[in-house]
Amino acid sequence: MKDSAYIIEQPVMVNLDTIAARFRVDTIACPPPEPELPRETFEAGIEPEPRTVTVGDDSGVLSVISVISILLLLCFKQCRRIFSTIGDELWGLRRRANTFDEHTSGESRVIALMLVQWAVYCGLLMYSALSLRMPLDPSHAFSDAGALILLMCAYLGVQYVAYTILGYTFSPGLGAHQLLKGFTASQAVTGFLLIVPALVAIFYPDAATAMVITGGILYFLGRIVFICKGFRIFYQNFVSLLYFILYLCTLEIVPVILIIQSAIFLVSNNPLNQ
Image (cartoon, rainbow, N blue to C red; front, side, top):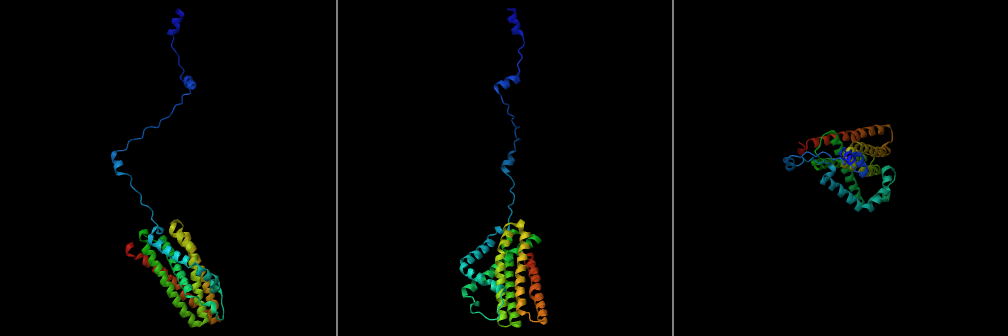
């Protein structure tokens, strides 16, 4: 009895680590409770951030691009025939007229549509270039881009009249005809080449700088090809070379400077941007 009493009176030593290991008790760390937000926060909500708007989001600009693309797709059959002969019109030089040089009325309409396409994509690239130089409101993109597209259409018409006068003054007949053919061909090809840079510039503004430079290079190359054909048509002696230099200054350098200044003036004085 004494021994048993002695055993009961002894303190029981419990090893908690041993028990936890035996029964495999896992401890779970509970994160601290999140602080309660005041009632006013739920009632007011979160301040919304304005969505970034680009010129590619403007419905008017998208409509113009869509209409031009659809019309050209509908005229795909005529486009194939035009592009099969456009290389000769762009660079070739014949001293005798060819019966097949003339285009049908349907092909002439397609060529006119290609020239309008050139004006559209040149205007969009010019808008992207100006947006890099000055802050433009994207909500007024259609009015700004539309004014630039109309400016490029007017520039195209002035060029056509100037080259007509130039051709019939210095090389009447076949020379003037080939000069105008070379002009329309160079503009049509350039208009197709500018599609990708113009679309990338308006839909991805972060790449606008690279696309504007690319578009400028393509435009410059198109003009170089046309100038080379004009030189081949008009060059006869040293005097004609002097006339050609005057032509470059009058129709290829000064008008470009005037167009750039006019574009800046139109965008800067748009009442919607004031």
